[in-house]
Image (cartoon, rainbow, N blue to C red):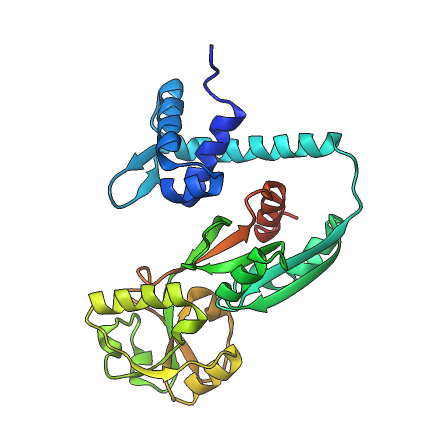
Length: 294
């Protein structure tokens, strides 16, 4: 008799739960989508409860799936620890880690020190760059893992989404718009906006402009400086406003005010941990570090 839960079923469930996409999960697992869908259906039948809501637009966890998720992660972590406990001990190695320059979550600060203090690696090399460049370095095996901004083209890599950040508006505190509690794209139609070049982040650029088109917004664009401190100096001086992920609100600067954007959720940028598909233990470790549990 087949058990209701086994390690393969848990691994398949986790792949779909963490990507919320049967296509992406199948790519991550190196299998085609129909067998994955059938396996999930069989798992749901054995458990006697649906794990996912499915429609043509999205995949979401059901309440049963949400209850199973933390247990599944814990089981896979214990299995990885069990495998490691019987493997020949290896000397700590250097970890090459990429950090996207597109977002500034608080847990990026000091992450190398937290990793080194864990004793898992004898050295940590941190590279900060745009997400597409980090993906190229990861594919070339010049990085072991990278925290990237999404959407970014990541075919062939395993990506675990860790955070989702709506966009906010950064503007000069002297701007009349700074008196408002919430800003909409319509409010910004006559305002000069800093905009990044498509070559820096093609997938996210296209995503943003699809949202702009949906709302009839055509920004009067000024080339966005790559250095965030230069950008915020320009915002403070009233040169232009900027759309930034919510984490940038922690960067305080005189003369800069941040306001929620009504369409900020549609323009949201996610933070994902990208690795090669066979680095499950590294994913578990770095996810723990990002959560502040190390």
